[in-house]
Image 1 (tube, rainbow, N blue to C red):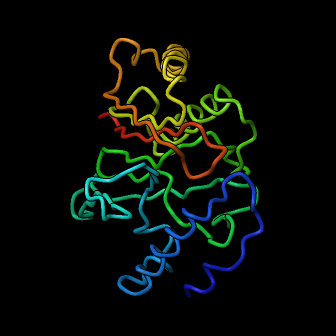
Image 2 (cartoon, helix red, strand yellow):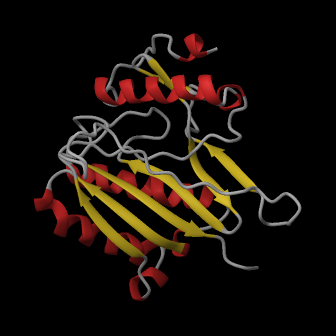
Length: 224
């Protein structure tokens, strides 16, 4: 089964990066060895995902750190089932092949009333490609993708509770925050006075050399 997932992809465009692909190889190999149902039972059980490339880790000997959040699906309690939503709503279907890995992960996971959102880059959801090298264009697309991710899970942008802003160029911080505020004014005015908790993480690189920004977030579904 694993060999099928590692077949050569047709798209070697903006999203291709050899380092991240080696990470995906390792993750899929681990799933095959220890929990093979994660390879066959998509989209159930597959995680949301955000990939950070940093200059150093706490342990100087470490090459990678994996941070995880898990939840027990309570099918005996209405409203506490864990629901998964696929990564791409693409004209080419799902899953999508990027470079030599067919990447499986959920765009959003609903756990009770909480929505865990995978990192939303500035790529086009229908192609999986970054169409512009300009920061402003990528930020605008990333915000649209974040809004779509909240709506995909049955909520709306106004119910964000936490954002992690992943930024490659620190000089774009002010522009990023200004665009974020303007977007909230247009699509989620409640967040202007009650903004989500937020952190900005400066990285030297994202999943692709072309990527300049990515938005990782947690939201919720309000009570009816």
